[in-house]
Amino acid sequence: MKAKWFILITAVTLVFSVQYLSAEDDGLLEVKKHFADRERQALNQPFKGVTSDGELQPNLYKISATGVSTQPIVNAATAFLSSLTASQRKKTSFAIDDEEWRKWSNVDNGIYDRQGVSLKEMSPAQKQQAFALMSASLSAKGLQQSKDIMKTDQTLKELNNNSVHMDEQLYFFTIMGKPSQTQPWGWQIDGHHLVINYFVLGNQVVMAPVFMGAEPVVTTSGKYQGNVVLQEEQDLGLALMMSLDKTQRKMATTGHKKGANMQVAANQDNKALAYEGIQVATFNKTQKAALITLIDEYIGNMQDDHAKVKMSEVKSHLDETWFSFKGEVKPDGVFYYRIHSPVLLIEFDHQAPVGVSSPSGSRAATRNHIHTIIRTPNGNDYGKDLLKQHLETHHH
Image 1 (spheres, rainbow, N blue to C red):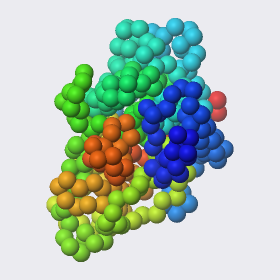
Image 2: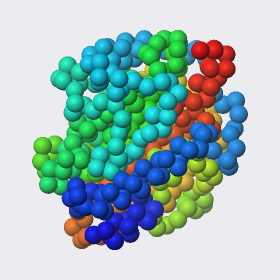
Image 3: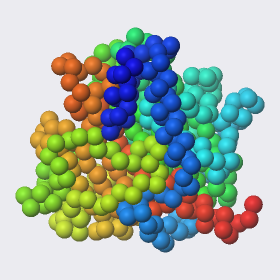
């Protein structure tokens, strides 16, 4: 058993399941140590941000007025904090520049120890305030998708002998800084397949990194039978690839066999990731519109008016954006794609089965396990660039 886990650790995907292990199994301890070591190594490196070549592209982000109020988000966060007990509030509250921002992972709670207070620890009234914070910060679509991802962990619990490490309520909230309309602050939710980092400064918002995934993507049994997530992200990405002509498709293709491809998930805050594939400047009008629709599927999880601000930023760099695709270009294919610009990085990846057994026992990637991530490259993940600018002009 222990040897099996060491083999899995070396897999590029670095995705693990604990349903095969008892709490006393040495293999679980080895996996937990592996993840803790990876995080420690990442945090030992000062934050720089994801780049295309190791060098930050300057002057991409400015402190400015967006005209979109963040007061509802401030009010919701204040109410949430007020609803907590003193001990819960202490567990939940961190400084604005705390490394807690960078402490997150998409894996389940048997593998990764999280900070903050979970939904499971909250009273019904406190849960209501936690979801009110999400509701004020996200669009109706983003809130529903977040809840649906939480439901998939309940399904995994049912499929894995009621594992204590999987639960629709094992999602942890933290607040960085103090909710304010003038001072920088933010919040984070961290759990299996759902991580949202949400930075606020004045009326500006940075929602990144955001990890959304699911297994199973389509739930066929149990409490949430019929729950379906991440299909638009999948289908629109494939449709975009299929809309390219033969020459364009060849340029976009970085491989015909999908391997383990996600590059900028947890502990990859400083990744140097080169532009790959085809530059969007070569797209025709219809293809550009299809790409914008696909990007909006991700950005549209943010509160509607703030999403419009972000989409305007994305469109201003549209011709500098690159699209790449790896895997099968067919209706039932499994694949990976990347959308990469100076101000946006999106990855979509079909993953190997982990918590849901494959009927054939295969470890090949499946459409029933999806990972996605959104980053703000060149130093503004977690709003770090805006925070730096603010601190340079405001001495605290």
